[in-house]
Length: 88
Image (spheres, rainbow, N blue to C red):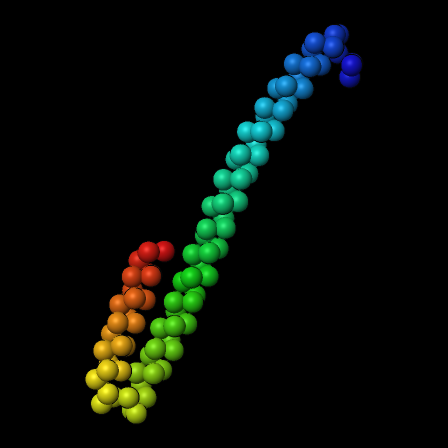
């Protein structure tokens, strides 16, 4: 009986405690989801920055400067990276 006057009082406390634990678990779940989405956004942002860096390195190479297909693809890739950055 946990020191309560009656079993009914103990049961009421148990029910109240279960409801409180349920609310706290839902709140924790929401916090964890938000934290993981922030981590994912940061990871995506880092990957985009790395891709942009690699792209910039390719653009600097003089070998491809006269290749119009290469230049067109560079523009397409930059556009995709920009859309990805805005989607985060």
